[in-house]
Length: 455
Image (tube, rainbow, N blue to C red; front, side):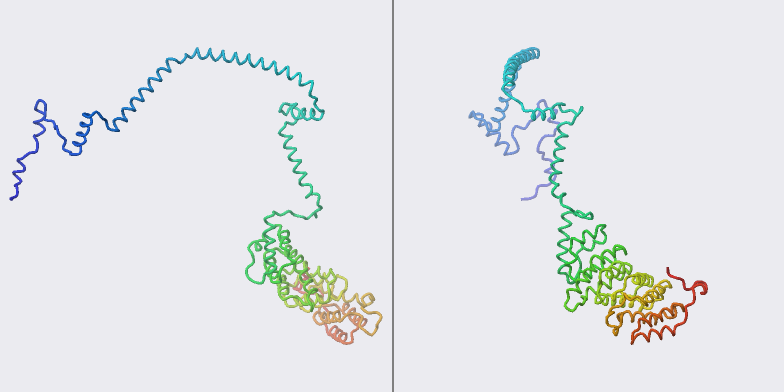
């Protein structure tokens, strides 16, 4: 079949133009639906109408409309039977009047019963007093305390009674109460430091030097049970981060006790290597070391063994001149003991340029042994030296280093001391050194005050 030309299709029109339909009297309306589905639905609806049945959707709508109409009718009937506002108000007044009459009857009965009960019941005096205390003012504060205040007062009294057993325990004046969490945390740190050998310290322990009450918290960790390695690490931490006065407290409270206990408990009376290093680190603050370790050690019956070990630390560490001179001056003013003489000798052998005041104290220290029989160690045996060898060695060290820094009068007194406290091996050396020295020039003769007393 051949193709239909486009001209032929254009000539054929599907329907009349709209203008023609409007111009006609009735117009041309479509009687059949173009959609097949719509036609089938309308056909079914027509069939149902013919049969006398309705579909579900239409039946629901009809029922809903019937329900709404029934509700409207019921509302109208209620409005007709409802009394007016005035009638309802009158009914309310009548009901209230009846209630009042009933209340009066019941109140009369209650009063009669209450009068009878008053004759039978007896109130105790204590109960009456309590009643008057709490209810006399009717809950007001006019001339008294109300019930709420009395209840709060009773609660406070109960709390105080609960705290009495704790307060009754006698506590030292310096006691400080720490939070329970802090105590638990630092007790665990104390257990860690008890077995510590190497590695980083706990962070909670590192912040101790920054606390104001670090001594109280440190006591919770039981420093007596720390390992020697932990003591060394703690000494570095505290001495480097605390001031001189605070470092003195740590050295005296921790290092001094560990030093003495370690020497006493060891079999050969030696000091642990880590504690020895800790004491060397503590000399980073020399003032704290002398005030917190050396002077308390001398004052508390220091043995020669302890003095020898501590003096070896002083010998290996460089100490500022002023600190050494002050420490030497304080040692010279102490009572004579062999341990004190050991420290004096070590500080002299460091060969510092000591101030003249300290040199004069040294001269007076050795001069006071001339005619003092109380200094004798063994008075029964005249063949043995009366003073220990340590004293003669200290005297020799002073003569060798400072023979040119003493005056002629001081030299003569020292030679007299050598004669009275003579040692067969050391005495001749001391005399030779003193005689070889030159007299000291007075500070007034020195130019422009080049050598000035440090004090």
